[in-house]
Amino acid sequence: MTQLYIDADACPVRAEALKVADRHGLRVFVVSRGGIRPDPRPTVETVIVPEGPDVADRWIAERVGPGDICVTGDIPLAARCIEAGARAIRHSGEAFTQANIGHQLATRGLMADLRAANPLATGGGGRAFAKADRSRFLDAIERMVRAALKDSQGHCGGSAPPRPPPPASPQGHADIDGELHLVRQVEPAHSHPGIEPGEVGRDPDYVED
Image (tube, rainbow, N blue to C red; front, side):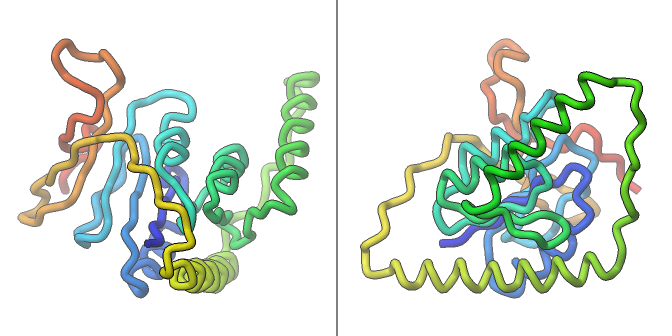
């Protein structure tokens, strides 16, 4: 069964990804450090991870598997998704693939080296995310979801290996504006005596209107 993972911090196409997932009945995990309003749809789970480098990426990488799709702009996370047999797509609609991920990792490393060698250099910034980019992403993720579902149906005969169970992490519901929202808040390990990682609660960064 195809599942959609959204690396949601600074993701400009979350609404578009959710729209396509809803159309196909996919289960969705919206993973962030907080500050994102939980979605009321029962198929969408909001996952809140602790502050820290690459925590959201690790959460996704530990769970994504064959047939799944990840929406991310993070190249190392995309590489881990592809290694796990999943698909990954940029916010621009460009697909990460086995054919291009190595080059993208190398380019990322080169740019990091250049920045380290000349930390005072100013970058060019980049153009604003436009309506055409959203349309391109919508078309691309629609095609990707259809391909993933087609592949999953092709493996229904039992030839595909079973997916290993994901790391356990309890979940619960937050009552927001009179509606129940599926929210999973991941606590940092050993952050509180007697509380295990994966405790569920309301997003601490969420402020009600």
